[in-house]
Length: 417
Figure (cartoon, rainbow, N blue to C red):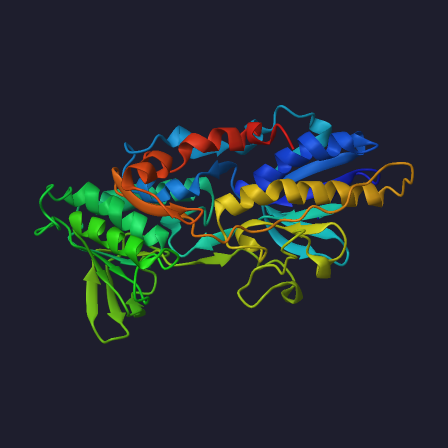
Protein backbone atom coordinates (compact mmCIF):
# COMPACT_ATOMS: atom_id res chain seq x y z
CA UNK A 1 0.00 0.00 0.00
CA UNK A 2 1.44 3.35 -1.03
CA UNK A 3 0.57 6.85 0.08
CA UNK A 4 0.42 9.82 -2.28
CA UNK A 5 1.43 13.32 -1.25
CA UNK A 6 4.13 14.96 0.85
CA UNK A 7 3.60 16.22 4.38
CA UNK A 8 3.41 19.83 3.14
CA UNK A 9 1.09 19.12 0.20
CA UNK A 10 -2.58 19.83 0.76
CA UNK A 11 -4.61 17.49 -1.42
CA UNK A 12 -7.99 18.58 -2.72
CA UNK A 13 -9.34 15.20 -3.83
CA UNK A 14 -12.22 15.14 -6.29
CA UNK A 15 -13.96 11.80 -6.71
CA UNK A 16 -15.63 11.34 -10.09
CA UNK A 17 -14.76 12.27 -13.69
CA UNK A 18 -18.07 13.48 -15.03
CA UNK A 19 -20.01 16.76 -15.03
CA UNK A 20 -19.63 17.57 -11.34
CA UNK A 21 -16.09 16.31 -10.80
CA UNK A 22 -14.53 17.80 -13.93
CA UNK A 23 -16.31 21.12 -13.45
CA UNK A 24 -15.24 21.46 -9.84
CA UNK A 25 -11.66 20.53 -10.73
CA UNK A 26 -11.49 23.30 -13.35
CA UNK A 27 -13.16 25.80 -11.04
CA UNK A 28 -10.76 25.09 -8.17
CA UNK A 29 -7.71 25.29 -10.43
CA UNK A 30 -8.88 28.57 -11.99
CA UNK A 31 -10.51 30.43 -9.11
CA UNK A 32 -9.65 28.80 -5.79
CA UNK A 33 -6.00 27.76 -5.67
CA UNK A 34 -4.66 30.99 -7.29
CA UNK A 35 -6.35 33.02 -4.54
CA UNK A 36 -4.84 31.07 -1.65
CA UNK A 37 -1.77 32.40 0.24
CA UNK A 38 0.51 29.53 -0.87
CA UNK A 39 -1.00 28.12 -4.09
CA UNK A 40 2.03 25.92 -4.76
CA UNK A 41 1.17 23.76 -1.73
CA UNK A 42 -2.31 22.79 -2.99
CA UNK A 43 -2.95 20.00 -5.45
CA UNK A 44 -6.18 18.93 -7.11
CA UNK A 45 -6.27 15.14 -7.49
CA UNK A 46 -9.09 13.98 -9.77
CA UNK A 47 -10.01 10.30 -9.41
CA UNK A 48 -12.11 8.50 -12.03
CA UNK A 49 -12.64 4.87 -12.98
CA UNK A 50 -12.64 5.93 -16.64
CA UNK A 51 -10.00 7.93 -18.47
CA UNK A 52 -12.63 9.46 -20.74
CA UNK A 53 -15.54 11.68 -19.82
CA UNK A 54 -18.91 10.78 -21.34
CA UNK A 55 -21.78 12.96 -22.47
CA UNK A 56 -24.23 10.63 -20.77
CA UNK A 57 -27.39 12.33 -22.09
CA UNK A 58 -26.29 11.24 -25.59
CA UNK A 59 -26.41 7.51 -24.78
CA UNK A 60 -30.00 6.91 -26.02
CA UNK A 61 -28.96 7.88 -29.54
CA UNK A 62 -25.34 6.72 -29.42
CA UNK A 63 -26.28 3.14 -28.51
CA UNK A 64 -28.37 2.77 -31.68
CA UNK A 65 -25.74 3.43 -34.34
CA UNK A 66 -22.19 4.71 -34.77
CA UNK A 67 -23.35 6.99 -37.56
CA UNK A 68 -25.88 9.05 -35.60
CA UNK A 69 -23.45 10.90 -33.29
CA UNK A 70 -19.66 11.35 -33.65
CA UNK A 71 -17.79 9.34 -31.02
CA UNK A 72 -15.03 11.93 -30.82
CA UNK A 73 -17.59 14.33 -29.38
CA UNK A 74 -19.35 11.86 -27.09
CA UNK A 75 -16.10 11.05 -25.26
CA UNK A 76 -13.28 13.31 -24.11
CA UNK A 77 -9.89 12.26 -22.70
CA UNK A 78 -9.82 13.59 -19.14
CA UNK A 79 -6.06 14.10 -18.61
CA UNK A 80 -5.83 16.09 -21.85
CA UNK A 81 -8.37 18.61 -20.55
CA UNK A 82 -6.01 19.55 -17.71
CA UNK A 83 -2.72 19.95 -19.56
CA UNK A 84 -3.24 23.71 -19.30
CA UNK A 85 -2.45 23.67 -15.57
CA UNK A 86 0.86 23.26 -13.77
CA UNK A 87 1.61 19.67 -12.81
CA UNK A 88 2.35 20.70 -9.23
CA UNK A 89 -1.34 21.69 -8.92
CA UNK A 90 -3.04 18.79 -10.70
CA UNK A 91 -2.92 14.99 -10.89
CA UNK A 92 -5.27 12.49 -12.51
CA UNK A 93 -5.66 8.98 -11.09
CA UNK A 94 -7.56 6.32 -12.97
CA UNK A 95 -9.05 3.99 -10.40
CA UNK A 96 -12.06 3.07 -8.31
CA UNK A 97 -12.58 4.47 -4.84
CA UNK A 98 -12.78 1.58 -2.40
CA UNK A 99 -13.05 3.53 0.86
CA UNK A 100 -13.56 7.06 2.14
CA UNK A 101 -12.39 7.27 5.74
CA UNK A 102 -13.84 10.64 6.74
CA UNK A 103 -12.58 10.33 10.32
CA UNK A 104 -8.91 9.85 9.43
CA UNK A 105 -9.36 11.86 6.20
CA UNK A 106 -8.04 9.17 3.88
CA UNK A 107 -9.26 7.92 0.50
CA UNK A 108 -8.30 4.44 -0.70
CA UNK A 109 -8.22 3.78 -4.42
CA UNK A 110 -7.99 0.52 -6.36
CA UNK A 111 -5.96 1.42 -9.42
CA UNK A 112 -7.21 0.46 -12.85
CA UNK A 113 -3.92 -0.99 -14.07
CA UNK A 114 -2.56 -2.72 -10.95
CA UNK A 115 -3.60 -4.63 -7.86
CA UNK A 116 -2.18 -2.39 -5.09
CA UNK A 117 -4.43 0.06 -3.31
CA UNK A 118 -3.25 3.66 -3.15
CA UNK A 119 -4.06 5.86 -0.18
CA UNK A 120 -4.60 9.60 -0.37
CA UNK A 121 -4.55 11.91 2.61
CA UNK A 122 -6.94 14.75 1.86
CA UNK A 123 -7.19 18.31 3.07
CA UNK A 124 -10.53 18.61 1.28
CA UNK A 125 -12.63 16.15 -0.67
CA UNK A 126 -15.51 16.53 -3.13
CA UNK A 127 -17.76 13.50 -3.65
CA UNK A 128 -18.94 13.62 -7.25
CA UNK A 129 -19.12 9.94 -8.15
CA UNK A 130 -22.56 10.15 -9.70
CA UNK A 131 -24.84 7.16 -10.08
CA UNK A 132 -24.95 3.99 -12.19
CA UNK A 133 -27.71 3.04 -14.58
CA UNK A 134 -29.28 -0.43 -14.45
CA UNK A 135 -28.55 -0.84 -18.15
CA UNK A 136 -24.83 -0.69 -19.03
CA UNK A 137 -25.86 0.87 -22.34
CA UNK A 138 -26.85 4.14 -20.68
CA UNK A 139 -23.72 5.17 -18.80
CA UNK A 140 -20.25 4.34 -17.56
CA UNK A 141 -21.09 1.44 -15.27
CA UNK A 142 -17.52 0.30 -15.93
CA UNK A 143 -14.99 2.17 -18.06
CA UNK A 144 -15.28 3.61 -21.53
CA UNK A 145 -13.97 0.40 -23.14
CA UNK A 146 -16.76 -1.67 -21.63
CA UNK A 147 -19.42 0.81 -22.72
CA UNK A 148 -18.19 0.86 -26.31
CA UNK A 149 -18.08 -2.95 -26.37
CA UNK A 150 -21.65 -3.17 -25.01
CA UNK A 151 -22.85 -0.73 -27.66
CA UNK A 152 -21.21 -2.82 -30.39
CA UNK A 153 -22.81 -6.04 -29.10
CA UNK A 154 -26.21 -4.40 -28.82
CA UNK A 155 -26.08 -3.00 -32.34
CA UNK A 156 -25.23 -6.40 -33.75
CA UNK A 157 -28.16 -7.98 -31.90
CA UNK A 158 -30.41 -5.14 -33.03
CA UNK A 159 -30.25 -6.32 -36.64
CA UNK A 160 -32.01 -9.56 -35.66
CA UNK A 161 -34.45 -8.23 -33.06
CA UNK A 162 -38.17 -8.73 -33.64
CA UNK A 163 -39.41 -7.26 -30.35
CA UNK A 164 -38.01 -4.84 -27.75
CA UNK A 165 -39.21 -4.06 -24.21
CA UNK A 166 -38.03 -0.98 -22.32
CA UNK A 167 -38.66 -0.63 -18.60
CA UNK A 168 -39.13 2.92 -17.41
CA UNK A 169 -41.29 5.84 -18.48
CA UNK A 170 -38.86 8.56 -17.48
CA UNK A 171 -36.69 10.57 -19.90
CA UNK A 172 -34.12 7.81 -20.53
CA UNK A 173 -36.73 5.19 -21.33
CA UNK A 174 -38.71 7.50 -23.60
CA UNK A 175 -35.61 8.77 -25.40
CA UNK A 176 -34.33 5.22 -25.99
CA UNK A 177 -37.76 4.17 -27.27
CA UNK A 178 -37.98 7.13 -29.61
CA UNK A 179 -34.50 6.61 -31.03
CA UNK A 180 -34.96 2.86 -31.54
CA UNK A 181 -38.46 3.31 -32.94
CA UNK A 182 -37.43 5.83 -35.56
CA UNK A 183 -34.25 3.91 -36.48
CA UNK A 184 -35.99 0.56 -36.87
CA UNK A 185 -39.50 1.57 -37.98
CA UNK A 186 -39.29 5.00 -39.51
CA UNK A 187 -42.04 7.49 -38.77
CA UNK A 188 -45.73 7.53 -39.68
CA UNK A 189 -46.90 9.83 -42.45
CA UNK A 190 -48.09 13.37 -41.85
CA UNK A 191 -51.75 12.33 -41.80
CA UNK A 192 -51.28 9.15 -39.70
CA UNK A 193 -51.51 9.23 -35.92
CA UNK A 194 -49.51 6.02 -35.46
CA UNK A 195 -47.39 3.50 -37.28
CA UNK A 196 -49.80 0.66 -37.95
CA UNK A 197 -47.34 -2.10 -38.84
CA UNK A 198 -43.92 -1.42 -37.26
CA UNK A 199 -41.01 -3.58 -38.37
CA UNK A 200 -40.05 -4.11 -34.70
CA UNK A 201 -42.76 -3.59 -32.06
CA UNK A 202 -41.37 -1.70 -29.07
CA UNK A 203 -43.10 -1.57 -25.68
CA UNK A 204 -42.42 0.84 -22.83
CA UNK A 205 -43.55 -0.37 -19.39
CA UNK A 206 -44.11 2.11 -16.57
CA UNK A 207 -45.74 1.76 -13.17
CA UNK A 208 -46.93 5.35 -13.34
CA UNK A 209 -50.28 6.47 -14.72
CA UNK A 210 -48.39 8.47 -17.36
CA UNK A 211 -44.95 8.70 -18.89
CA UNK A 212 -42.56 11.54 -18.01
CA UNK A 213 -43.94 12.06 -14.50
CA UNK A 214 -42.04 15.33 -13.95
CA UNK A 215 -43.88 16.99 -16.83
CA UNK A 216 -47.54 18.02 -16.96
CA UNK A 217 -50.06 15.57 -18.42
CA UNK A 218 -50.53 17.50 -21.65
CA UNK A 219 -46.82 17.26 -22.46
CA UNK A 220 -46.69 13.59 -21.49
CA UNK A 221 -49.68 12.84 -23.75
CA UNK A 222 -47.95 14.63 -26.62
CA UNK A 223 -44.85 12.49 -26.06
CA UNK A 224 -46.97 9.35 -26.19
CA UNK A 225 -48.43 10.43 -29.53
CA UNK A 226 -44.92 10.98 -30.91
CA UNK A 227 -43.93 7.50 -29.72
CA UNK A 228 -46.92 5.96 -31.52
CA UNK A 229 -45.67 7.55 -34.73
CA UNK A 230 -42.48 5.43 -34.55
CA UNK A 231 -44.10 2.15 -33.55
CA UNK A 232 -43.79 2.39 -29.77
CA UNK A 233 -46.65 1.39 -27.46
CA UNK A 234 -46.84 2.34 -23.78
CA UNK A 235 -48.05 0.01 -21.03
CA UNK A 236 -48.96 2.14 -18.00
CA UNK A 237 -49.96 1.42 -14.43
CA UNK A 238 -48.03 -1.83 -14.05
CA UNK A 239 -44.51 -2.70 -13.04
CA UNK A 240 -42.16 -5.53 -13.95
CA UNK A 241 -42.31 -8.38 -11.46
CA UNK A 242 -39.64 -10.70 -12.87
CA UNK A 243 -37.19 -10.88 -15.75
CA UNK A 244 -35.89 -14.25 -16.88
CA UNK A 245 -33.02 -14.75 -17.08
CA UNK A 246 -32.08 -12.19 -14.41
CA UNK A 247 -28.97 -11.13 -16.32
CA UNK A 248 -30.95 -10.00 -19.37
CA UNK A 249 -30.45 -6.31 -20.04
CA UNK A 250 -28.00 -5.85 -17.20
CA UNK A 251 -24.99 -8.16 -17.37
CA UNK A 252 -25.94 -9.30 -20.87
CA UNK A 253 -27.37 -6.55 -23.08
CA UNK A 254 -28.21 -8.95 -25.93
CA UNK A 255 -30.01 -11.69 -23.97
CA UNK A 256 -33.59 -12.55 -24.88
CA UNK A 257 -35.95 -12.07 -21.95
CA UNK A 258 -39.31 -13.20 -20.63
CA UNK A 259 -40.83 -10.34 -18.64
CA UNK A 260 -43.66 -10.94 -16.18
CA UNK A 261 -45.69 -7.90 -15.16
CA UNK A 262 -47.37 -7.52 -11.78
CA UNK A 263 -50.77 -7.62 -13.52
CA UNK A 264 -50.00 -11.17 -14.68
CA UNK A 265 -49.25 -10.38 -18.31
CA UNK A 266 -46.10 -11.80 -19.88
CA UNK A 267 -43.97 -10.10 -22.54
CA UNK A 268 -41.26 -11.74 -24.61
CA UNK A 269 -38.42 -9.59 -25.89
CA UNK A 270 -35.45 -10.22 -28.12
CA UNK A 271 -33.90 -7.19 -26.40
CA UNK A 272 -34.72 -5.84 -22.95
CA UNK A 273 -33.49 -2.45 -21.68
CA UNK A 274 -33.98 -1.48 -18.01
CA UNK A 275 -34.08 2.31 -18.28
CA UNK A 276 -35.54 3.18 -14.90
CA UNK A 277 -33.74 5.10 -12.18
CA UNK A 278 -30.12 4.96 -11.06
CA UNK A 279 -28.10 3.64 -8.13
CA UNK A 280 -25.81 6.18 -6.37
CA UNK A 281 -22.12 5.23 -6.49
CA UNK A 282 -21.69 5.58 -2.74
CA UNK A 283 -20.87 2.04 -1.61
CA UNK A 284 -17.47 3.20 -0.34
CA UNK A 285 -18.96 5.76 2.06
CA UNK A 286 -19.87 5.13 5.70
CA UNK A 287 -23.59 4.43 5.95
CA UNK A 288 -23.99 7.06 8.66
CA UNK A 289 -23.39 9.69 5.97
CA UNK A 290 -26.03 8.34 3.58
CA UNK A 291 -29.73 9.08 3.25
CA UNK A 292 -32.31 6.32 2.80
CA UNK A 293 -31.98 6.43 -0.99
CA UNK A 294 -28.21 5.89 -0.79
CA UNK A 295 -27.17 9.44 -1.61
CA UNK A 296 -24.78 11.43 0.58
CA UNK A 297 -26.56 13.63 3.13
CA UNK A 298 -25.58 17.09 1.92
CA UNK A 299 -26.49 20.54 3.22
CA UNK A 300 -28.48 21.76 0.19
CA UNK A 301 -27.42 25.40 0.44
CA UNK A 302 -23.66 25.06 0.94
CA UNK A 303 -23.09 21.53 -0.48
CA UNK A 304 -21.09 20.58 2.62
CA UNK A 305 -21.39 17.14 4.17
CA UNK A 306 -21.51 18.58 7.67
CA UNK A 307 -21.66 15.28 9.50
CA UNK A 308 -18.43 14.07 7.86
CA UNK A 309 -16.19 16.84 9.16
CA UNK A 310 -14.55 19.96 7.75
CA UNK A 311 -13.98 20.55 4.02
CA UNK A 312 -16.01 17.59 2.77
CA UNK A 313 -18.57 18.29 0.03
CA UNK A 314 -20.87 16.42 -2.37
CA UNK A 315 -22.47 17.32 -5.68
CA UNK A 316 -24.33 15.58 -8.48
CA UNK A 317 -26.22 12.30 -8.55
CA UNK A 318 -24.36 10.93 -5.51
CA UNK A 319 -25.54 13.85 -3.36
CA UNK A 320 -28.89 14.62 -1.74
CA UNK A 321 -28.43 18.36 -2.31
CA UNK A 322 -30.94 18.63 -5.18
CA UNK A 323 -32.75 16.71 -7.90
CA UNK A 324 -30.16 14.97 -10.08
CA UNK A 325 -29.93 17.06 -13.25
CA UNK A 326 -27.05 18.54 -15.23
CA UNK A 327 -28.41 22.08 -15.03
CA UNK A 328 -28.54 21.82 -11.23
CA UNK A 329 -24.92 20.64 -11.14
CA UNK A 330 -23.75 23.53 -13.31
CA UNK A 331 -25.62 26.06 -11.18
CA UNK A 332 -24.10 24.61 -8.00
CA UNK A 333 -20.45 24.49 -9.10
CA UNK A 334 -19.68 28.20 -8.39
CA UNK A 335 -21.38 27.89 -4.99
CA UNK A 336 -19.37 24.85 -3.97
CA UNK A 337 -16.19 26.44 -5.34
CA UNK A 338 -16.70 29.67 -3.39
CA UNK A 339 -17.46 27.82 -0.15
CA UNK A 340 -14.43 25.59 -0.62
CA UNK A 341 -12.24 28.67 -1.11
CA UNK A 342 -13.67 30.19 2.07
CA UNK A 343 -13.06 27.00 4.07
CA UNK A 344 -9.50 26.67 2.77
CA UNK A 345 -8.75 30.27 3.73
CA UNK A 346 -10.17 29.72 7.21
CA UNK A 347 -7.94 26.66 7.57
CA UNK A 348 -4.79 28.73 6.95
CA UNK A 349 -5.22 30.44 10.34
CA UNK A 350 -4.20 33.76 8.78
CA UNK A 351 -5.98 36.68 10.37
CA UNK A 352 -4.93 39.50 8.03
CA UNK A 353 -7.07 38.46 5.07
CA UNK A 354 -10.69 39.24 4.33
CA UNK A 355 -12.83 36.11 4.10
CA UNK A 356 -16.25 36.34 2.50
CA UNK A 357 -19.31 34.58 3.88
CA UNK A 358 -20.91 31.43 2.48
CA UNK A 359 -22.60 31.38 -0.89
CA UNK A 360 -25.92 29.56 -1.03
CA UNK A 361 -27.39 27.36 -3.73
CA UNK A 362 -31.13 27.51 -4.32
CA UNK A 363 -32.62 24.91 -6.60
CA UNK A 364 -34.95 26.04 -9.36
CA UNK A 365 -37.91 23.72 -8.86
CA UNK A 366 -39.92 24.92 -11.84
CA UNK A 367 -40.93 22.40 -14.51
CA UNK A 368 -37.76 21.83 -16.50
CA UNK A 369 -37.04 18.82 -18.70
CA UNK A 370 -36.36 18.29 -22.41
CA UNK A 371 -37.04 14.92 -24.03
CA UNK A 372 -36.19 14.29 -27.69
CA UNK A 373 -38.27 11.61 -29.41
CA UNK A 374 -36.31 10.53 -32.44
CA UNK A 375 -34.15 12.83 -34.51
CA UNK A 376 -36.76 15.45 -35.35
CA UNK A 377 -39.29 15.76 -32.53
CA UNK A 378 -39.44 16.22 -28.79
CA UNK A 379 -41.33 17.57 -25.81
CA UNK A 380 -40.40 19.54 -22.74
CA UNK A 381 -40.52 22.64 -20.62
CA UNK A 382 -37.99 25.18 -19.38
CA UNK A 383 -38.58 27.32 -16.28
CA UNK A 384 -42.24 26.29 -16.31
CA UNK A 385 -42.82 27.16 -19.97
CA UNK A 386 -43.80 24.43 -22.42
CA UNK A 387 -41.58 24.41 -25.52
CA UNK A 388 -42.62 23.58 -29.07
CA UNK A 389 -41.16 20.44 -30.62
CA UNK A 390 -38.79 22.34 -32.94
CA UNK A 391 -37.22 24.20 -30.01
CA UNK A 392 -36.67 20.97 -28.07
CA UNK A 393 -34.90 19.68 -31.17
CA UNK A 394 -32.79 22.82 -31.47
CA UNK A 395 -31.71 22.82 -27.83
CA UNK A 396 -31.24 19.10 -27.22
CA UNK A 397 -32.63 16.79 -29.87
CA UNK A 398 -30.20 17.60 -32.68
CA UNK A 399 -27.17 16.24 -30.79
CA UNK A 400 -28.14 15.60 -27.14
CA UNK A 401 -26.16 18.56 -25.74
CA UNK A 402 -22.89 17.71 -27.53
CA UNK A 403 -22.75 21.36 -28.57
CA UNK A 404 -22.22 22.27 -24.91
CA UNK A 405 -19.76 19.66 -23.66
CA UNK A 406 -16.49 20.78 -25.26
CA UNK A 407 -16.33 24.01 -23.25
CA UNK A 408 -17.37 22.09 -20.15
CA UNK A 409 -14.70 19.39 -20.40
CA UNK A 410 -11.87 21.82 -21.26
CA UNK A 411 -12.91 24.32 -18.58
CA UNK A 412 -13.70 27.31 -20.77
CA UNK A 413 -17.18 27.39 -19.24
CA UNK A 414 -15.54 28.22 -15.91
CA UNK A 415 -13.27 31.00 -17.20
CA UNK A 416 -15.10 33.46 -14.95
CA UNK A 417 -16.16 32.68 -11.37
